[in-house]
Structures are given as C-alpha cells and as structure tokens.
Length: 264
Image 1 (cartoon, one colour):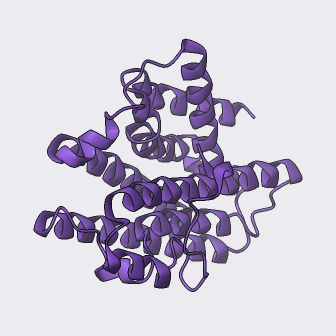
Image 2: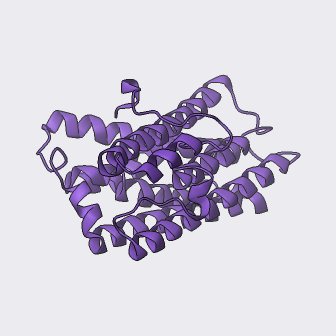
C-alpha cells in the first residue's frame, strides 16, 4: 500500500501541469505521468526486475515520453489543433473544486493503469515470466500502432488539411491511435496473469483497464462529433464512416455519437 501511495504522489506531481491549463491533465500530464511512473516502479522494485518486466518499464517510458512530446509539438505547430484545444468551452476557467477532482481522478487512473506491472513486480519473483513477455510484446505492438497512426495522420493533414484521413491504418478503423492505446493497456493487463494478484489488486487493475477503455471510446465520440460537423455533408466521408469501425477492428460499431454516457 505504501508503494501505491508513492506512485500516486508521483502521478499527482506530474499531472499538476493541468493547473496551468486544464486539458494538460489529460494530455501532457498523462504522457509524462506514465513515463514518471515507469521510472518510479523501476526504483521501487529494482530488486524484483526480470528481463520482461524491465522491458515493460522501458516500453512504458518510451510510450509516455513519445506521447507527451508528440502532443506538445502538435500543440505548438498545428493551428487547427490549437483551435480545438483552446476553443469555446475549453478555455473557460474551472472552479477550484472541479480542478481538484479532475486532478485526483487523473492521478488515480494513471496509477491504476500501470498497476498490473506494479503488482507483478511487488508480488515477485515468479516461477514463470511467460505472461510478462506476452504483455510486453502486446505493449510494443500498441506503441508501434499508435506511433504509425499519429505519423500517418500528420502526413495526411499536411498534404490536405481540409480532408478527413482515410488512408493507411485509418482504412481499418477511424481511430487507430486510440486502438493503439487500448492495445498498450491490454498488454499491461495481460502481464498481471500468473503474478499472484489478490482480489483487491485485480479490482484496481480492472478499474484501470475499464477506465482507459472508457476514455478512449469517449475520445472517439468527441472526434466523431467534430468530424460530423466538419465533413457531414461530404458523400465520401459518409461512405467512409458507414464501412469503417470507429475503434475496434471487425467490431461493427460505426458510431458512438448518440451515446451521451460516453461524454467525459
């Protein structure tokens, strides 16, 4: 429990960047927060590190730094993104109570997300590290998927900023970067198998996984609403959304715009 409090304190410290600008709780605070948690776990559990768990921490560090830096650079360079980020409804000053609740929620979620890895390390050593290897492999695939998706979208928008993106991985799902996120945390979840987790540890792991999946579907809904407003009269866009799942390949969910409960 003490280790969880330390991880929570680190997540709070890094995500405090959101006090500068509200959206940073979910962007820079998220990416760099995960990176900081990976380093903290390495320090806390250095005696229990194995090759696959050390690899997992390195992957989470890479993920966090890449995502945080990508979001920071995109904010600085993309005028369209700044308009979304600082547009109406986003630039309003939030009450202190709301800020504190969001700050606490984000820090708790980030700790819960990395908890499968933390619990495997805390409960170690283990007779088999098979699931740690499997988890690390899935995380690596997720990072690759997210990175390629971001690069493909940047390239497509640079070529034609007024058109929706339907090339590359965007032919498979409309939010492949969010799919990459889900894949990353699925890998983290898998790494907890065979690590002797208690019921309360699995509860935290389950909350973290359900939380990030919810956040990704919520993000997909926000993107869909923006795209509907921008491209709703485009026949090509209408054809694209009717045949391309929004987030999960082969799962015939083509729209989540009507689901108000996904609003976050």
